[in-house]
Image (tube, rainbow, N blue to C red):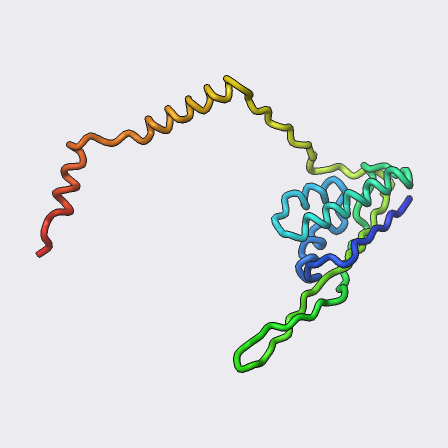
Length: 170
């Protein structure tokens, strides 16, 4: 049973916000954790996903571990040094601002048997764009459809509304 440890230092995000994401993937298999991070809308999920993929690559290439057996044994977020700034306020005063950063430590371990994954991650296929004449024809069709949607109603149906809003209120 092998262990792979990776670190991300000086991430310019508050540790409190990063912990919200890391707590959701603790103990999951690598595949499930990747799926969780891909779907998570929080800003911290991108650097954590990058760190996880780096750890997976290190474990499979350098330590010859099986990717299907890997899981997140431990993930820890510590506070890094703060950048201290000042915000000017009324009457010549200043308010301190603490721009926090974090250190993330990720430990992958290899389990005895492969965990069954709930998700399957697939790469997106690139959409081929039509070229030349086909593109022009497609644009023309779209323009014709838009023109048909924008047709004005006959004046007879609008007459009632005109009378309605022309009335004097009592």
